Image 1: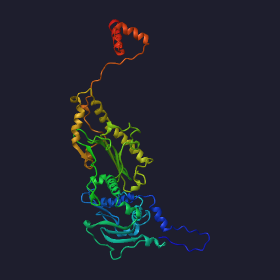
Image 2: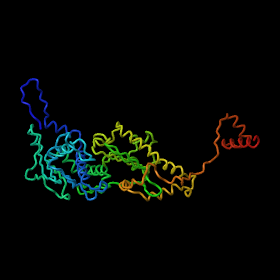
Image 3: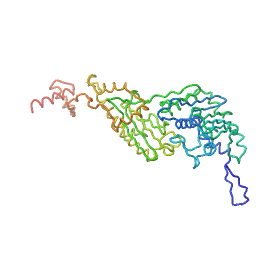
Image 4: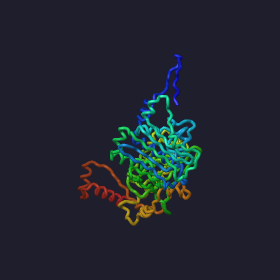
Amino acid sequence: MIIQTNSTDPNIIAANPAKGFFVSMLIKDITLRDAIGDLVDNAVDAIKARAENPLDLKGYEIEINLSKDSFSIKDNGFGMEAKVARETAFNFGKSDQHKLIDKSIGQFGIGMKRAFFKLGRNIKVKSVAKTSQFELIINVDEWLKEPEKWEFEFDSKTLKENIENNSSETGLEVRITNLSDDSKASFIDKTFIDQLQKEISLEHMININKGLSINIDGFNLKSNEITLVYDDNIKPTFWEEILKEQSVKILAGISVKDNGDEGGWYIFCNDRLIVAKNQQKETGWGDGLPKYHSQYYKFRGYVFFEALNSSNLPWNTTKTGMDMDSPYFKKIKMQMIIMTRQVMGLLDKLKDEKTKDNPEDNQTLNKAVNRSLNETVTVVEVLKKTNNLNSTFQYPAILFNPPKKNKSIKISYQVTNDQFEAVSQHIGEKNPKEVGLKTFKYYSDNEL
């Protein structure tokens, strides 16, 4: 709450914020797409907090609907307790008392309000939580008219506390009307909706792989299954570190899709995809490793950073990349490079073995790997089997059968034209290569 000062002391300077300016600056640098993304992140956090098994999100849903008149998002997560709404969730910024959901994506406590203001002017929030439920209506234009009043109010008829709601009924629903001009135009633009669907399906790839359903305008988002080869012959390399404030799991191996679009490193922070298909210096390629090229198309690496407090994650503040100055990320990047080199050992051998000088029947390592490519497993399943993995990439190196190297040596030297013509005519050979071979043979036969 902002307190106006009526002091007549000439030494006092008023520094109270103006609501209108505050709101306009709050939404200035956020896109409509990012605003919706923040609300999806919040919904995912609530669902993960309710889920009994973090690797199984089947049955959990996020439904988004867009039109020229309204926006809505609904989830069946654990809802928002009235006490949390009253004391922390609607603060502008994260107060010292605001405890984030463990392993959440949200970090600064401002994304929800910023998204509301970006999308429209009339906001209705409906929540059913474990021990309370409420509805809240915010008319932004009316709220702005009261410069001293920074609070919002529950609909008193809907507020219930100290109750016991069935867990199957919990969730949060937000409906926004009186949309911004940007929202009105974008929500009937097929290109915008298509891009929104693609970006959210990518960002929440691992959660969709775990069974989470995200529906936008009746379209259930699909995400490529992220996989690794896992069988008796080939097993990914696995490394993990568990610290007090954060932990990380790393998997590296190969996958069946042999194309440059899918290969590289994928980095997740509390299960939110931050870096996808990275083949650049950010993950070591061309910076401690060779540059990424077709020889390494089968490579797949997955990093899973986790932190109870998301502020300890080594990402940038916009969730669009890693904090390259973070000492923690620099340390993990070195481990990623070590694990990449292990997988490159196999990929280099596959290339060396598969040459035109080596008959296909002799390419025993390639044949073994091709058989194993039928045994891909989703990364979610691999994470359930990490007890069977270690820090060494396993593959049948004993089967490596490169072509026999030609033991001949190439000799090259230069002579004058006159010398060459004299010798060429004497031995009856015009081809320089043949002249060289015959002169060498003459020396070998007569001098050795």
